[in-house]
Length: 324
Image (tube, rainbow, N blue to C red):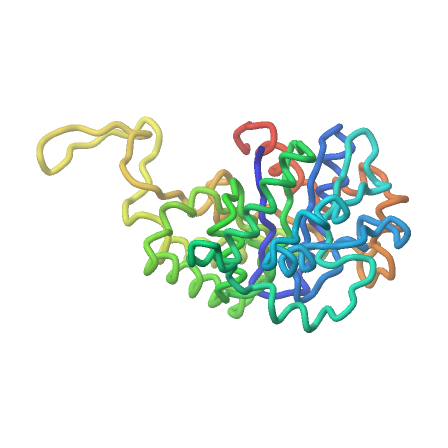
């Protein structure tokens, strides 16, 4: 079952709102969706998909703490709830914390600790989290898993991308130097760590909160700067070859367009990972007091107008289709 990570360099880009709307849309199509709120330092996704009376007793933070002393199974059955927004499918939410968050700040100081095993080895927190995720998948049997990652370029946020087996990694981006400097640093770190080639084909840039005015110009700038970062870091240093074009190599052999070696794309290629899927700004989602209430009253066409490109791309990934 596909795991899809929603990631951003900075918060406040509408990432969690987009995830909630994506889960809503997939459930409309009859999908069983598992949603995890891994933005533990800034939790809130569960309130977008669950009313207060449906909040489960425990959450991911509670499990990570209890697992350190082999008590994770005690709370496992009480850390997921089904959304009232499920429609024809189902949305199962595992929040960052339970209904009674207790000493949440104190708990955060321990969630990232490795677990000491009986044989003296240590299990990293990311391995523990992956173990929890596999157990949840086995229990709930979802069609897709949507993961709301912590923002930033630190080790914890990066692990949500590199160590949870994500099939699709959505990189939310606002047009600006801060965004692209951050992604450049992250990509360069993957190159130094030797994991860039394992990750790059699963990446997809998402143009976050695209403004109403000059929308095409904004997206063109976003695509241009996204392309520059990919070319400088993740794309192979080869010239993209046009389909049907032919030529002779230095060794005398011939190549035919479409059979080029390496991983690279034209800037205008809509199937390229640097080509942004647009999430449009809409006043009905700006400054909401309750996203849960908004999604309860929204219609399919309105969701499509704001999140259409993102939802189509995710739906294709879930169904195993190529993104057009």
